[in-house]
Length: 274
Image 1: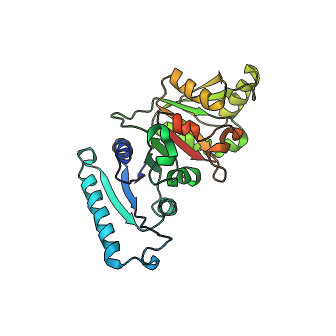
Image 2: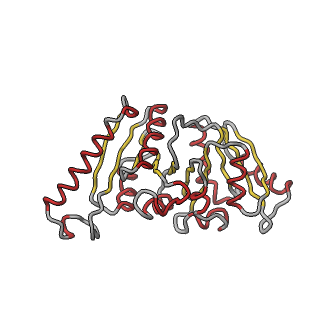
Image 3: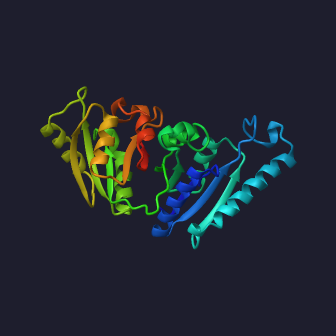
């Protein structure tokens, strides 16, 4: 967690994400990079070539830099290594480029609670970041005064395609010294006996060095409700899921989880790309 990227649109929800990122950076001796992607009206790519006069461009850029400077003076960032970037680029594309260029370890983004991705950051850009980011994306729904991850729920079918991202899940849990609560959701349309489900999970977890974990089989009407209800039942601090870059959240977990899980989860959610 040495480099944490915080895309901001200067909203209250972006500030919630930044406060959590500050806590993570403080505990892990990390660096925060504040990013504002300045999308000018009718922008199709490079701001200069899209017809905007240079004085107008500089006005918007200077205003954004001033806002970022003001944020960097916040008390909750005292003593942290914080830098800021303003770029004229489509937000989704710009964020993905910066991830690679700056060797980012984690992205923290704010969300408008139950309205989810449609209102997060800049339109649908956050959904695209979650879908395509090669690094974990932590989604924060509300202000969290003390971000501690003791109970980390990860739901999956524990198939072979989850192995690569699950290694990142284990690293994430170990970084926070969290206990992983691994859960397989049984639904009427996709039911496994307890013995079969437990064997699948035992064979899967045997391949990884997990410091602290437990396995659970939870029955519910559908996968979304199962994950939310299980997380509520143990008062989880964080919910983890995998995403397909090409197909997004709607095809996670053999196609049965939709964006509704992220939209309806009040708890923080972290995503890992398959």
